[in-house]
Length: 405
Image 1: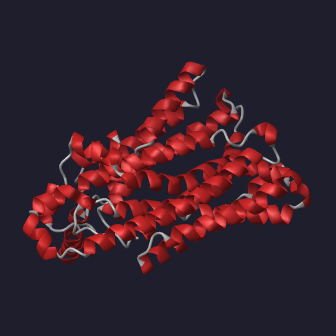
Image 2: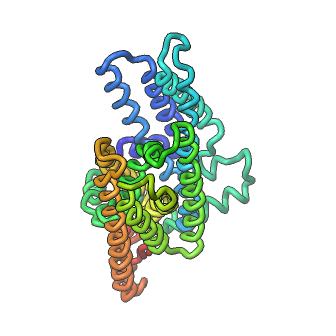
Image 3: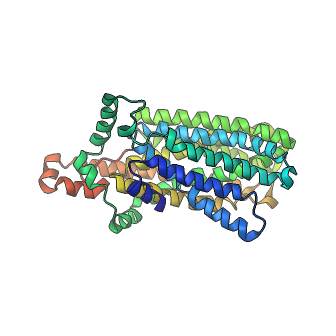
């Protein structure tokens, strides 16, 4: 949350600078993983890297909200996750190649993985302010005046006009308290956890799952590529469909249902995985097809239902914080001694897939009920009772606001 507060408060017109700063910083701490020599050192750089890296995702989500209208976001967020999926496809191979540098400059191979990937991250962070256009108003190099005016105007109209936009930009402790008390974050958290918990577990264990099927180390890395590629394609398709049909819930429930099917097949067959390689591998591919659309779908849904720059900035960050709580637990559910069956890991992943479907259905029904209730009050009646400033301060609690379903 502090990162998005700084981004919106001090770098609102130059978000590329803040995103670049935190990227360079966590890249430096990643590089330092390769040179520290004691537990205290590795703990310190790990914590500092995590602190700065944590601001990247909510910052990127907030940045895209400055450029795209609500029914363009899912496609853009999905492209963000296409990159994540493809990095998962090839990071194992890169790590395997970097590990071959064992002994160069007297350093172990695993140290070179952190050093090289950290340096690449630092370079990307340095390039960010140069190549990332901050806002439509500042994109003078590749947009003409008419195009910039069009992009700026449509965002202003979506937010209810410049007066309401300005009123919704005020940060306060009461706003933070409103966010913490907002019911939708806690239901939405189960949507994110239906992605985060299985995804973390899958990333940590997929090469081992492939080895349990009987593949060699090298072939196991190669066999992880198709599931990630399938996940990347799936993320983009579901994102496009969600924007096209202007419906978030359906395009979360479908992949969450696929996730339930995948783990329902994988969980009972995993103890005899070598005798069921085809079915188990298909389940791993299906799980990735299901997992990668969930996070961009959830991010676009919560972004659509937060109004005002200030609440959107803090709300996205708070949602990310809740999401990362799931990531902490996910690190421990795939227990090495339980392999190759991993009943805890697969069982917990299945359970969160089910909870994700329940959360999506409940959110859809609750949002629909609130919208129906608000539609019974005319806009004239609302404006007679409230000023523009009052409505802006109310945010998504305004009688004029309609939740995206």
